[in-house]
Amino acid sequence: MLGRELDDHFRRASKHGLKVSTTTNGYWAVTEKSARERMERAADAGLGDITLSTGEMHAKFVPPERIVHAAAAAFDLGMQVHVAIEDFADTTFDWRWIVDAREIRERTPDPRLELFRRSWIPHADGVGRAVLRHSADDRRFRPDPVPGCGFIFDDLTVTPDLSLAACCGYPIESIPDLHLGSVANKTIQEVVEEAPDDFLKVMLHVAGPELILEFVKRFIPNYVLPVENVHMCQTCLHLHRDPVALTIVNEHRAEIESRIWELFDRKRARPTNHDRMAGAAG
Image (cartoon, rainbow, N blue to C red; front, top):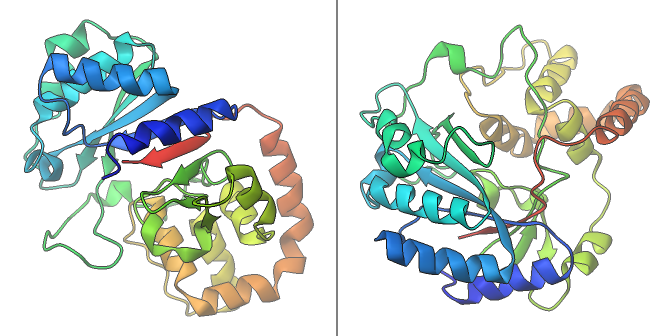
């Protein structure tokens, strides 16, 4: 969508000392040669981390061979490479084909090349006709604890329309409160410094949206939890779109604020699981 302009954004973020990442379907990696050429331009501009998305839905438009070409090219240029494969109950996509591809096998096991499956969820605003089913084992509401959002304070995403967001998830375009401002005429630092304090982001980082909604249910016993959700982003979207839940959190903030800040400080004192700080969706 941004074409060569995307490299300019990589370069700008890199010059400011940010670690730069991007998420893409790899449509441009038609051949090994074209993948190498595209990744060379991106690497020269400062890109150091790339997520490549594939699976049954992606493969309808972008052959998975291109993901393999892109992953190999990015890896050989020293990037951290993540291959994210859609996962849902009725998928016919054979993810093992990616794992067994020669270009992947030759470069694994290596911590710079990560392949994983993640739950594929419906569009936040109902676009699309696919009906997705998931195993009950994948649900986010369960007895064992689920982690909070590890991205909201470590990743900044620049969207194609130059909006800066504290989010890199599926519903990024559908949660206005996670958008900090536009970098069209301001620096990233200026936008971040001008963004208002938001205790809800701290809660999302420390506890995650599921625990926040369970906190809401303590005050509204008949509150219906979205127990069918299989992805944290689904629950985050639900939380941000539910005025009742947001009101309860705001009204009872004082009861948990000191504990949340204590956990936040403890969590931020530890190294994060990933080192992505600046993303560009493309």
